[in-house]
Amino acid sequence: MALRNILTVGEPALNKLCRPYTEFGPRLHELLDDMRETLIQADGVGLAAPQVGVLRRAVLVIETNHAEDEEDLFLELINPEIIASEGEQTGEEGCLSLPGECGIVTRPMVVTVRAQDRNGNPFEYTGEGLTARCFCHELDHLDGVLYPERAERMLTQEEMMEYADEIGEEA
Ligand code: NI
Image 1 (cartoon, helix red, strand yellow):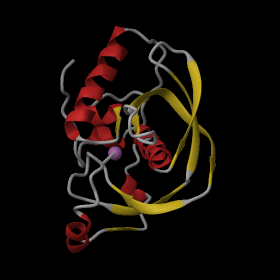
Image 2: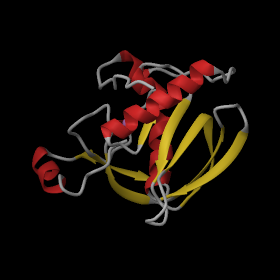
Image 3: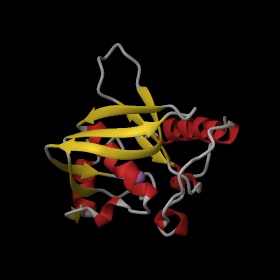
Image 4: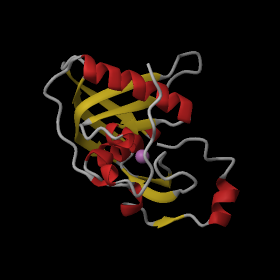
Protein backbone atom coordinates (compact mmCIF):
# COMPACT_ATOMS: atom_id res chain seq x y z
CA MET A 1 0.00 0.00 0.00
CA ALA A 2 1.09 3.52 -0.63
CA LEU A 3 -0.14 6.97 0.22
CA ARG A 4 -1.57 8.95 -2.68
CA ASN A 5 -1.58 12.68 -3.05
CA ILE A 6 -5.01 14.26 -2.38
CA LEU A 7 -5.79 16.86 -5.02
CA THR A 8 -7.14 20.19 -3.87
CA VAL A 9 -9.66 22.57 -5.43
CA GLY A 10 -8.43 24.08 -8.68
CA GLU A 11 -7.18 20.75 -10.02
CA PRO A 12 -9.20 19.96 -13.19
CA ALA A 13 -9.59 16.28 -12.17
CA LEU A 14 -11.99 17.34 -9.41
CA ASN A 15 -14.52 18.68 -11.91
CA LYS A 16 -14.63 15.76 -14.32
CA LEU A 17 -17.28 13.12 -14.92
CA CYS A 18 -15.73 9.79 -13.92
CA ARG A 19 -16.03 6.59 -15.99
CA PRO A 20 -17.47 3.32 -14.64
CA TYR A 21 -15.34 0.28 -13.87
CA THR A 22 -15.69 -2.74 -16.14
CA GLU A 23 -12.65 -4.64 -14.86
CA PHE A 24 -12.22 -5.57 -11.23
CA GLY A 25 -8.58 -6.57 -11.18
CA PRO A 26 -5.33 -5.78 -9.38
CA ARG A 27 -5.26 -2.19 -10.58
CA LEU A 28 -8.57 -1.40 -8.84
CA HIS A 29 -7.54 -3.36 -5.73
CA GLU A 30 -4.30 -1.44 -5.45
CA LEU A 31 -6.17 1.85 -5.82
CA LEU A 32 -8.64 0.89 -3.06
CA ASP A 33 -5.85 -0.23 -0.72
CA ASP A 34 -3.99 3.03 -1.34
CA MET A 35 -7.16 5.07 -0.85
CA ARG A 36 -7.76 3.38 2.48
CA GLU A 37 -4.27 4.20 3.71
CA THR A 38 -4.57 7.76 2.38
CA LEU A 39 -7.96 8.27 4.05
CA ILE A 40 -6.74 7.00 7.41
CA GLN A 41 -3.65 9.19 7.19
CA ALA A 42 -5.80 12.25 6.33
CA ASP A 43 -8.21 11.47 9.18
CA GLY A 44 -11.25 11.71 6.90
CA VAL A 45 -14.48 9.72 6.62
CA GLY A 46 -14.69 9.40 2.85
CA LEU A 47 -12.57 9.59 -0.29
CA ALA A 48 -13.39 9.40 -3.99
CA ALA A 49 -11.03 8.16 -6.72
CA PRO A 50 -10.91 11.53 -8.55
CA GLN A 51 -9.52 13.09 -5.36
CA VAL A 52 -6.39 11.04 -5.95
CA GLY A 53 -6.43 11.78 -9.68
CA VAL A 54 -8.16 8.62 -10.90
CA LEU A 55 -11.20 9.50 -13.02
CA ARG A 56 -13.11 6.32 -12.25
CA ARG A 57 -16.29 5.58 -10.27
CA ALA A 58 -14.90 4.28 -6.98
CA VAL A 59 -15.35 5.67 -3.48
CA LEU A 60 -14.44 4.69 0.03
CA VAL A 61 -16.68 5.58 2.98
CA ILE A 62 -16.03 4.80 6.62
CA GLU A 63 -19.15 3.58 8.40
CA THR A 64 -18.89 5.26 11.79
CA ASN A 65 -22.33 4.24 13.10
CA HIS A 66 -21.52 1.22 15.19
CA ALA A 67 -21.10 0.10 18.78
CA GLU A 68 -18.02 1.45 20.51
CA ASP A 69 -16.34 -1.93 20.75
CA GLU A 70 -16.65 -2.52 17.01
CA GLU A 71 -14.09 -1.40 14.48
CA ASP A 72 -14.87 1.09 11.72
CA LEU A 73 -16.20 -0.58 8.60
CA PHE A 74 -14.63 0.52 5.30
CA LEU A 75 -17.25 0.52 2.56
CA GLU A 76 -15.80 0.19 -0.92
CA LEU A 77 -18.36 1.33 -3.46
CA ILE A 78 -17.61 0.71 -7.13
CA ASN A 79 -20.00 2.18 -9.73
CA PRO A 80 -22.32 3.34 -6.91
CA GLU A 81 -25.74 4.87 -7.37
CA ILE A 82 -28.29 6.15 -4.91
CA ILE A 83 -31.47 4.09 -5.20
CA ALA A 84 -33.45 5.49 -2.25
CA SER A 85 -33.29 8.32 0.23
CA GLU A 86 -35.48 9.77 2.93
CA GLY A 87 -35.58 12.50 5.52
CA GLU A 88 -33.33 15.52 5.73
CA GLN A 89 -30.34 16.74 7.71
CA THR A 90 -28.76 20.18 7.64
CA GLY A 91 -25.27 20.55 8.98
CA GLU A 92 -21.59 21.22 8.49
CA GLU A 93 -19.73 19.50 5.70
CA GLY A 94 -16.08 19.55 4.74
CA CYS A 95 -13.86 17.95 2.14
CA LEU A 96 -10.24 16.82 2.11
CA SER A 97 -9.89 18.60 -1.24
CA LEU A 98 -10.93 21.92 0.32
CA PRO A 99 -8.77 22.04 3.43
CA GLY A 100 -9.69 24.63 6.06
CA GLU A 101 -13.19 25.19 4.69
CA CYS A 102 -16.62 24.17 5.80
CA GLY A 103 -20.15 24.74 4.55
CA ILE A 104 -23.73 24.18 5.62
CA VAL A 105 -25.30 21.52 3.41
CA THR A 106 -28.71 19.84 3.51
CA ARG A 107 -28.65 16.13 2.63
CA PRO A 108 -31.05 13.21 3.12
CA MET A 109 -30.94 11.53 6.55
CA VAL A 110 -31.06 7.99 5.17
CA VAL A 111 -29.51 6.93 1.86
CA THR A 112 -29.46 3.51 0.19
CA VAL A 113 -26.80 2.88 -2.42
CA ARG A 114 -26.42 0.08 -4.92
CA ALA A 115 -22.81 -0.62 -5.85
CA GLN A 116 -20.33 -3.34 -6.69
CA ASP A 117 -17.58 -4.56 -4.40
CA ARG A 118 -13.92 -4.80 -5.45
CA ASN A 119 -14.62 -8.10 -7.20
CA GLY A 120 -17.64 -6.83 -9.10
CA ASN A 121 -20.30 -8.40 -6.88
CA PRO A 122 -23.37 -6.19 -6.56
CA PHE A 123 -24.71 -5.21 -3.13
CA GLU A 124 -26.91 -2.63 -1.47
CA TYR A 125 -26.21 -0.70 1.72
CA THR A 126 -28.24 1.76 3.73
CA GLY A 127 -26.44 4.49 5.65
CA GLU A 128 -27.80 7.00 8.15
CA GLY A 129 -26.66 10.37 9.41
CA LEU A 130 -22.99 11.03 8.66
CA THR A 131 -22.79 7.92 6.49
CA ALA A 132 -25.76 9.07 4.38
CA ARG A 133 -24.18 12.52 4.06
CA CYS A 134 -20.92 10.91 3.06
CA PHE A 135 -22.57 8.76 0.37
CA CYS A 136 -24.06 11.89 -1.23
CA HIS A 137 -20.81 13.86 -0.94
CA GLU A 138 -18.58 11.12 -2.39
CA LEU A 139 -20.97 10.24 -5.21
CA ASP A 140 -21.06 13.92 -6.15
CA HIS A 141 -17.26 13.75 -6.54
CA LEU A 142 -17.75 11.12 -9.27
CA ASP A 143 -19.77 13.65 -11.25
CA GLY A 144 -17.24 16.42 -10.68
CA VAL A 145 -19.41 18.20 -8.11
CA LEU A 146 -17.85 19.70 -4.98
CA TYR A 147 -20.03 20.44 -1.93
CA PRO A 148 -19.85 24.28 -2.13
CA GLU A 149 -22.20 23.90 -5.12
CA ARG A 150 -24.72 22.30 -2.75
CA ALA A 151 -24.04 24.51 0.26
CA GLU A 152 -26.50 27.07 1.56
CA ARG A 153 -23.47 29.01 2.64
CA MET A 154 -19.84 28.57 3.58
CA LEU A 155 -18.71 29.26 7.13
CA THR A 156 -16.66 32.38 7.78
CA GLN A 157 -13.14 32.07 9.19
CA GLU A 158 -14.50 33.24 12.56
CA GLU A 159 -17.17 30.57 12.56
CA MET A 160 -14.57 28.04 11.48
CA MET A 161 -12.51 28.83 14.55
CA GLU A 162 -15.58 28.45 16.77
CA TYR A 163 -16.42 25.12 15.19
CA ALA A 164 -12.79 23.99 15.02
CA ASP A 165 -13.12 21.73 18.03
CA GLU A 166 -16.30 20.12 16.74
CA ILE A 167 -15.13 19.51 13.20
CA GLY A 168 -12.92 16.52 13.38
CA GLU A 169 -14.14 14.88 10.24
CA GLU A 170 -13.72 15.78 6.64
CA ALA A 171 -14.84 13.90 3.58
NI1 NI B 1 -14.85 15.50 -0.60
